[in-house]
Image 1 (cartoon, rainbow, N blue to C red):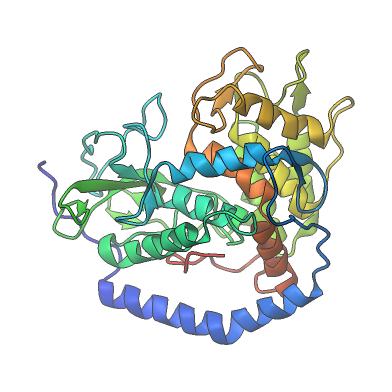
Image 2 (spheres, helix red, strand yellow):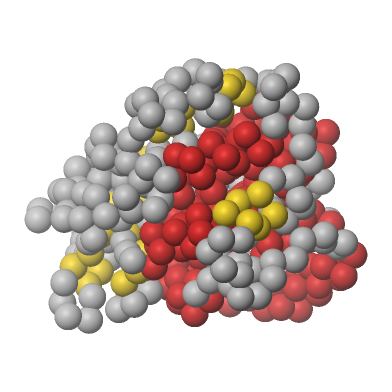
Length: 379
């Protein structure tokens, strides 16, 4: 395919040592801190075992509800695309979004489009596996995903995207400089399945194509404060980032900024900003509110209105996922994608909400803490 051999940003030896140190520290230190933090939590939710499709599930902190059948459809959306041969959920389209996204190799050359179900997105797999925690879903699949993503550090020099990890309890920089990167092995080859079929690993990553090096994290908290109307999702990611770092004031300020631009259509659907709305904002907002607290919503809009928008939109999707874009329940509705669908699950995941809360209570991070380039993925 004319791929120029890539220069991995960190040597396998250094990566291995880094991961080993992280694991040791995590077990000996942070693990103890977080276990103490867990003991302080007073979590009010309980998802009963053996729930049936007709039952209604209350979110972890009780702010909204979801039909059990809807949550089960979200699980099926991912399990149907899971490839046990490599331990990852595949992307069902040729590109990350049906509108098309171009990915480049580290040298800047354009990566060729690969067929559906031969592309895998590590960050979305991480979010999906995390979202399964505490919901009674396929935990073996989730653990396999965590292991597969962690192994990418050694096989292709995978680097954390420093983008959405805050929703899973990991701090991120205050601004991102991500490029759409296609990861390959040091010799320029794709990873291959046991049967010899090649597959592509794609992800937004902090990579500079011009000098072929990783970009360092932005350390300035002021770059993340307040609403960015052109990147509502980033505003929410930073709200959780501030929360994890112990800055509850700016966490709520960011969340409130997004709440202020919520709008309700005559058909009852809710969106953030201007139509067409992004579906991902719905679940991401609900998760942020579960963790940080419910902000003041515009008159006539409730948390259940936001949740009901998710489940009503889902009812029109043949694959059981959540549409990535909509203008109302019936207008401008596009197909589902992974980040929108797992965002909805994250909001209802007791394991995720508990973990994020415990990290903040542990005091492990502050406003000057530096995000890890090679975190140990998991919950």
